[in-house]
Image 1 (cartoon, rainbow, N blue to C red):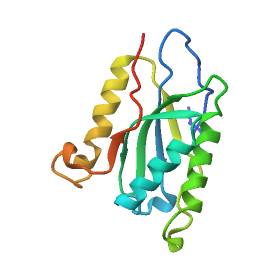
Image 2: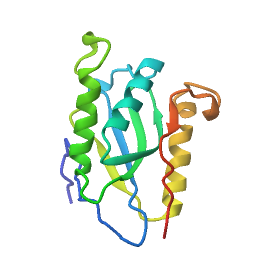
Image 3: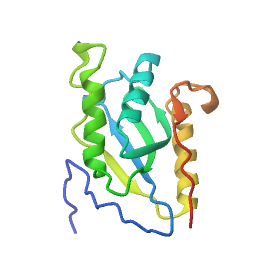
Amino acid sequence: MDLPDRKHPARAPVYDHRNRSNILFITVCTHARKRILDNQATHELLVNCWQKADHWLIGRYVILPDHIHLFCAPAKHDHLSVKSWIAYWKSLASRRWPNPNEQPVWQIDAWDVQLRKGDSYRAKWEYVRQNPVRHNLTTSAENWPYRGELNRLEWHD
């Protein structure tokens, strides 16, 4: 059976489990995978945009030269869709981007996966945390300066 050649991710709505966590794992890439994200000015800009885009809470994140991995969870009962929320903060960041010659900044869409269990959350975080080491950007994940946690997202079964 041939699988479809997808240009954009298949996106299911966030399923509200009510009795356990609704945490998504997101990957956002730069346009043409330009290596423009790994600097302090961009890190500060993104954190500011994420704080303004308050329909979703950013948990742990790692910013790499050409993509971002982050965990997020709805901040409000009537939150924007994840697709609209990502488009919003990417637009904010693009309008404030310090280097106009780097436009367009972002790939059109993003990839998101809703986590189903706490083990998955821990495993994905370990993968994300080690990404700078795997890409030979640092020798230790703890030394990578473009990572953080804006909100503590707890897994509740």
